[in-house]
Length: 329
Image (cartoon, rainbow, N blue to C red):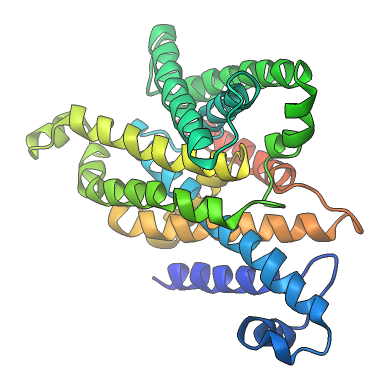
């Protein structure tokens, strides 16, 4: 539990930094005043920077990071694959491609409409990756799933680019969204879609005990009275709700579920009842830290959070794969 407490403190620090840092640095005392008594600030620009720009950005980062962190744990649990992640296995790329199709082909601009496209894309891609891995050999093989996921992600990325290049208006509006960003996102949209995330969290909570049993093997899970079809179906619903909604809000972000799940597992072990909430905390902290880094490394501009996350997550993925090979040897 000490590790979980440290992750919680890390999240609190990440929230504070997200509210205070950016193109215009703000003292923590000024941040508190801007939140509690904006009329008492000497410079009204501080209130605008904190309340109108950073609070929505931070709130969306919390929602997106927590959703992807939890989706990563569920995906790793149901596949028994320690490197499973919605971004790595093409789920977020599928949601992103579907959103772009909705914009370019159907003229969709509403928050709910885009979320429906994202959820449909996430569902189809999740089923497709599983089917391709099953056709290629062992669906449960971590290396095979990652390879198939990368192939699907690359293919969908190419198609997304082609669609955007054929529609300059869509390209102009979503050229930053497609690399993953919290900048300029609408808090009202996040609030509108929050019930989908809550539904995903509720289903995930119901899966905690079944996933613990599934970790011991299919036969053990059956012997304990769990219906494997229902467990896998519920896991699919959870992954689609969480990853699809997160992608609709922030664009495709990779590695968040992977990093959140492994940080949580190192902190509290493999019991899903603890692993799930701690992974959500870790995922939210990771997204906010990456967003803050992106604001600071290239002043007066900034790097999109998706770019920073990819740069931080790729070395960890390589390390995890190497560690598994060493253990297998």
